[in-house]
Length: 355
Image (cartoon, rainbow, N blue to C red; front, top):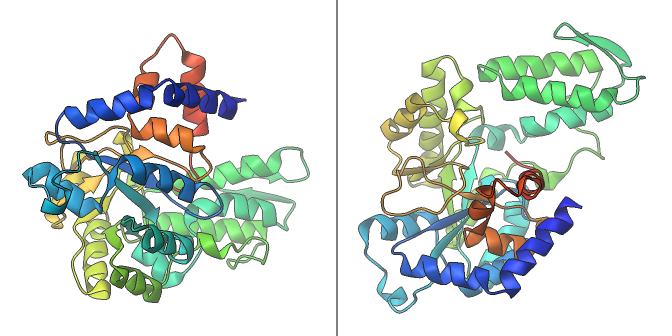
């Protein structure tokens, strides 16, 4: 029902001309950059989204778009193109970014910006946010205690509770070691292997390899950024040295592997509560030129280059919903306190698979 409401509302915006009006207002309001963020790209409406967006926006790499935003210098070849610059970013670097998104970028002449997590490239293990559901589904033990909490998987509804319990512990870990130790303890308690079984091992949701990353980098359509070494939520890391390592080492490794520096950083999860002043300072000290959050909004020349807004999108969304998001209309909806049911439905519907 919530999905239907969203599509109907987005359809009203589109066919009434409000989306076109919002696009024109943005074009006339001065320099702007909209940054959309995806995670996985295959199995949904990603191509349909891009077909719409490239008709109505000037899609650019993040580095090129931000250079124009802050310098005011427009590439001569775009001098007569008044469309608002828009960036398509993908977080985490899933394999389907290589097997599918890169081909789309090349075939449709659409630059993409992808944020990589080198630690997962090295190990090619499942990302931590998939572990809760995976272990809860594969658990062979039926009754056990995990971190002082007792579970009986014979009880109805126990597995979803277990999945959330594991996810919460991984998410709120105060160090990468604590997170990985907990996941190891969970595997032992649940009697599951660290290797996914055939049903659970979705290759598209693993990280790209370095070979794939290099091929993407050389394609001319993919720009890479940094997303920490191991994807912890940085504001939860209690050791400042470890937090700074996650930020700095990621840039160093990517430079060594790709053969050139990366200029941008994406905060894991990326809401305001996940980004402390100390984290922002670490990003500045590491030498990045800009950093992106997941706070909703469209960027202007006055935007903090280390707290840039992005618009979360998902491949399962209808293209009409993405059209409304890119135009900035969902920001208007979120302020309509007299329509809480729409705001709540929107918030629930736009949650994405990745982190």
